Image 1: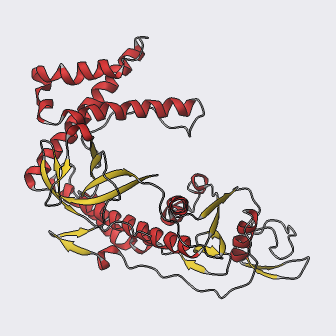
Image 2 (image 1 turned 90 degrees about the vertical axis):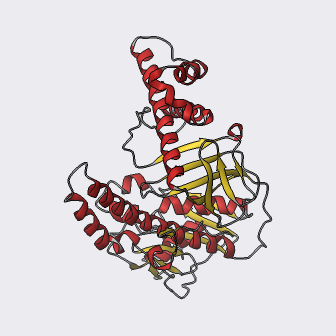
Image 3 (image 1 turned 90 degrees about the horizontal axis):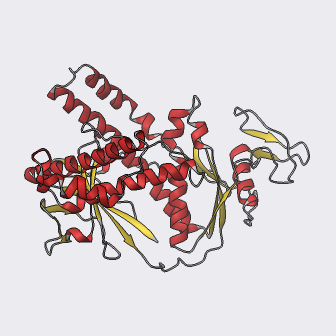
Amino acid sequence: MQLRYSFRLYPSAGQRMALARAFGCARVVYNDALRARETARGEGLPFPKAGDLSKALITEAKNTPERAWLGNVSAVVLQQSLRDLDAAYRNFFDGLKGKRPRMGAPRYKSRKDTRQAVRFTANARWSITTGRKLRLPKIGDVRVKWSRTLPSAPSTVTVVKDSAGRYFASFVVETGPEKSLSEVAPEVGVDLGLGHFAVLSDGTKVDSPRFLRRAEKRLKKAQRDLSRKQKGSSNRSKARLKVARAHARVADTRREFHHQLSTKLIRENQAVAVEDLAVKGLARTRLAKSVHDAGWSAFTTMLEYKAARYGRTFHRIGRFEPTSQVCSACGVKDGPKPLSVRTWTCGACGAVLDRDINAAVNVAKAAGLAVSACGAQVRPGLVPAPRGEAGTHRDGQTTVAGPPSL
């Protein structure tokens, strides 16, 4: 299994300038290669091969006055930029062939993009020093906040600057089979929603934290201040950074909540079943903000990979399964009901059913799990404090810890 580990970087002022050069050079090579292929397509010529593009846009371009500054960064970064373009074209054509979900054609990168990234492979001879710093070619030894230990030696590292101006080192490592967790008896179905983030088939209800809604007042003020700044000014750049940092805090706290809840479910249950929700469709309705705030897709992805890593069973049932229309006690389909109906009485057996718990039990039954509608005690889940309150500070910046491990 491949796992990604991200750690916070704290580059010095000179290292930030060197990284900015690397980001810019990688972007220029990417755009030059895209322009060459688009020109060839417009003239009816075959696409230039990656080897020809590398020779023309990197090796030979360094000897020209217009692109001589490409020699100031590691050549591996430029080569990886061409590979990124190849991957973008491959994904685009695979989408047209139906091999994967459709996506747009590759587009030019802008120097105004707030997120930048470069990748170093083993050929770049990057390393982790004895002082636990990340040594990058033509950049230097960058200080890293190690929140955990890498399970194996990584072959590549991606340096990312996000919209909030933070730097991260992202490692992809290969891990062998993990030691499986000890077997437990419970098997649970999970019904995801907006009123409650998750309702389990044993009757447990986890409240929806609504991180974006809770931060709306602060976000509104920051966005209002940004709108009043003159375009192109330094004050506008500072205001944009404040907005980005406010959104980053929301995303961090949501991700932390997802990790904690998914870890808890995997530890306490031998099998977990969820419904395959049409998130893209729901995100086009009037509930769009709440749907995005919940982050169901990220949560189910965490459940799936943690189950595979630690020997648990994960089921995803079809989205057209009538989990809210079938009585979990007798199995009679009672038809659709408006969202305002939270409890209902089965006309066949007379059972009084909670809409969400009934749906969670039906999710578990559809996955073939051994559960019953036991009507367990309903209790709300814990809502973690925002990272701005619970985080630690270093160098005047909020330290972002990695996701919890099992």
